[in-house]
Image (cartoon, rainbow over all chains, first blue to last red; front, top):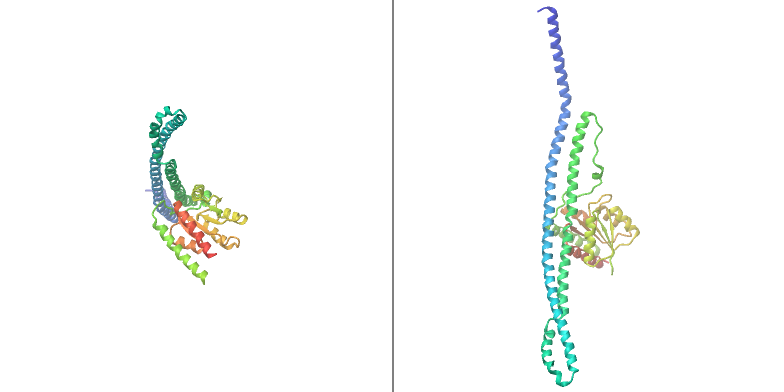
Length: 243
Length: 128
């Protein structure tokens, strides 16, 4: 091995050392960035299951309200059928009344006829009697009104079940908020490394007001708790007023 | 006597549901507001006998609205019913401390709405 070859080998060795040092320095400078990425990813991955869980509650709420509405519709359908049957029956009675009315007319004509022709009076009276014996129309109309009021109450129940829209929209806004947080956090970590401008939260979401814990439930215990707190405060207010 | 209601909710669906429920129990005089700020502006220019408000709303939320109502002399005694999804005990206490008259957790029934309105009107009549 001559001198030139020896120098070249040393030079190459020094270059390799310098490259290695530079690599180590670069890796050291990357450590805080990697830590930040790790934290951001950890933070974000904690939020994703929560978002997923909230989407599940949205599905459950819409399903529960849909079933509720379908049940109300079934009930309403049955009541409408009952009203139709009553109306058909009512129509038959009215037809019979029409027939009886024409008989009453014939009877009156008969009464004004010469006595020897009044042979049908007895017969007509027997036929007219059922008209007097049937339940009154006002009673039947009252029953129909009551059945229609039940149907109206069911339509109100359907309207109330649509509160699910307000509740699920709050749950979805909460999920959108979580997802946007993840987007902002990850974009800012990557952007910081690339020297980009910081990413801001979606303005339309920033203006939203929502309850992340909104639930569609007919469990009455929460309302009972609220009522008991309200009663305690009412008692306090009354005592203060009396003093 | 006709009671004039102010319904405050940022959800169009909820405003419509509350208005329908009120009509079903015989209350036809209703004005709507989309948030606390809108409601407070209406309260300053018009007279209302009863306020039904949501809690979570943009601009001014229901709790801030109640505090504003109680601070403003012309509205300080107007009955307020909070109708909200917030069902924690701490929320109810916070609302009562802000001096709402009663509290309903969504989803509610027309019967519950009627009961609370009647209860408030009866109590405010006694207190007067």
